[in-house]
Length: 76
Image (cartoon, rainbow, N blue to C red; front, top):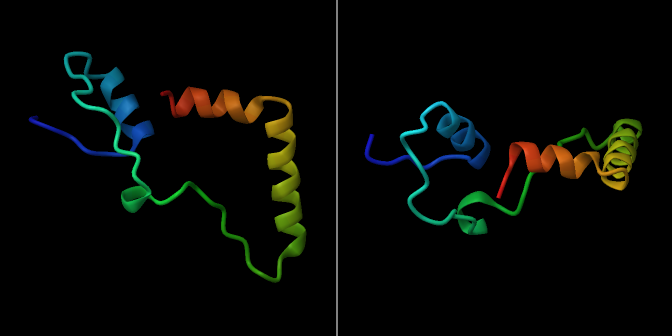
């Protein structure tokens, strides 16, 4: 393999099983290629689900769980 271009989480896991390979350049993070982040889609008429998701996200951000998950699966 001469080169790979892929999602950070996927590539990081792949590199764990291929220790002879490594990152040769800095990460490409330009929103032009990958957008500005992730999202969760909810039907416009399902306000109850949207509220539950927003509350759950707020709770895990407040207690540090979100950051721990982010650090585990999307290391810098």
